[in-house]
Image (cartoon, rainbow, N blue to C red; front, side, top):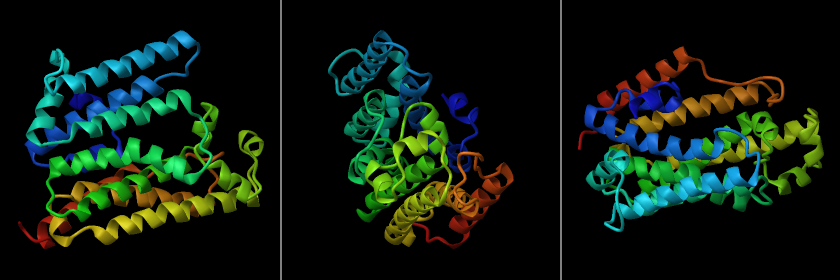
Length: 283
């Protein structure tokens, strides 16, 4: 499972690599589950009804495996490492089911009418990952759950901004349709990759919304939690920098693929880890 994660060299890897071995292995197993569910849905475009049915059967198999963790059915040996993590860190099994349900939405839903509708999707595919992760990292304050939820919103909204073109090419529009209407920028404009003042203002509005969730997350993170939750702060820093780069590039996501370079990710990870080790209070 670790190979599945490290081979992608994602921002998650830079966050996890500095963790103690037991925690790193647990979070890697958990992330491998998340990646597996995501790949069932996103590995290639759906070409026919039989393909859709096959993917839904795979997701249902995973639901059955989560149920089997509670003793209701036969657990596959492949899922045993995940079960050990869930039991060791008391991760609510509903979180795993919520993630499966959220990813399944991508099989049947390609547009979001309102932000509230999109927000529920973001909770299912991003915030719930944060909620599972803080169980592994360890936390003491109820506010930390709100930290995980809001950071999940922020990270997913940043992804949506970066991937407007890629998602459009796959047939998805995650920008809320009510926001397109607000800025008089039509779905047809987006599909045609019209880059003008309307699009820039639409994207600026989305970026401000994402930034508000970074701020909400940071506002509720207790100083005592920073020593154990530094991986989440690394994710925050990397994705916040990505958001800044998109803004500095005037939201030209149709013609540029914005990213944070590897040396910058490593610098951010080292800086935040050192701060957590040197200046955060021990429990």
